[in-house]
Amino acid sequence: MNTQRPLALFRRPAGLRLLLGVFILSRLALLLWNTPRVIGLSQPSDLRYMLGMAQFSDRGLYPYLGFWMEYPPLYPWLTVLVYRLGRCVVGTAAIEAWFYGVMAALMILCEAGVFLLLHRIALQLYGPQLALRSTALYLLLTVPGYVVAGWFDPLPTLLLLAGLYFLLNGRALPSGLMVGLGFVTKLFPAVLLPVALAVARGWRARLGYLSAVVGVIGSVWLPFLLASPSMFLASLRNQLGRSSWETIWALLDGYYGYGKVASLAEHLDASKALAANHFSELPWGEITLLFGVAYLVLYRRIWRARQPREIVAGTALTLLWLLLYSKGYSPQYLMWIAPLLVVLLPNRRGALYLGGLSLINLVELPVYFSFFPWCRVLLVLSVLLRTALLAAATGECLRLVAERVPRPVKGFASARHTG
Image (tube, rainbow, N blue to C red):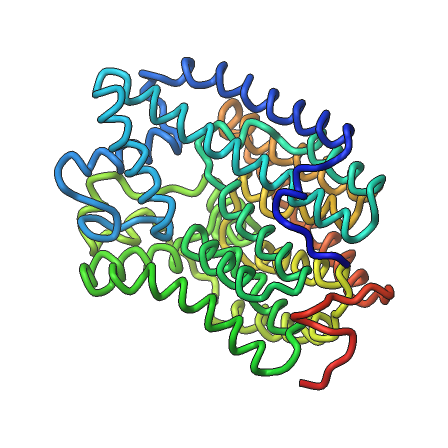
């Protein structure tokens, strides 16, 4: 496997250029259609919510300092930066259009990066033909509206795939840095950490990788902890302690709504970090222990992974396990796993998984939440079918982790080691 310069990523055949062009044009078309449509509307949305957060800066209040947040620091501060820049460029009259347009455009760029990285990873696993098939499946079967509807999941997904790409090429330091940046963006890119520790060559390499991840997290989080302990801890308490939504766990709790968040005013009060939670009697200590022990059993397979496809499968397995365990699920979470599914399964089974999950997402939103919120059977069936597909995909990844193909990762890991 040859490690190439970053610019080589863009020197791809005409087929990839065509797919990338269609991908970007489709997202830009949605952006141009969606932005004027939502300006001035009072209906809630993630972008409107984040705009309200960013507007706290007009009062000298900033994320993790003057108020707590549902997300790690990187994204909230990015929204503040875009908002403050907009105040300088367009003033207050057009700030809403500026904010929506710029944030959505940034997410389109991030998903374009996801698109290119999934192709590059698939190219390392199979070759040009199947790599193009993976990118085509991703283009055809993902729901494009998530990118321009206000969700920022393309950014942490990009960081996860960048970390995986560097790991496959034996570049431990940049991989660890990407995982650290991903964690301070939306936590889930940390699923690459146990995989990297498994494939590392010896304990010194593992310690170095872990140090890179912890170093990034500490350099971002520590200043906020020292400057405003109450808001930092309230943010952490919210991120780790939110109640269930749109999962099996939510159905067991008797909750049929979406993932609610506290009002903007409540974010100014550190004691309100869990204000939007609903009551639950589920034994989460025992559930966490059960999933943790089960993952350790699965991890024995990942620990033996040395080939590129095994490492990608181990990453997908860990991420799917996290989704099965998670208290909550929102439709945009499909963006986390979609690139890995099409890379691992560039065939009809991959199309079935991704197409099925995308269709179920659309039944949840907009069909259930926007049009038929009284018809709870729609949500119940969606959650059950989605969970079944995620469980089946987990089984596929477990099978792929155990497969042996003669293409070891160089540098950071080797085909055989006893460290």
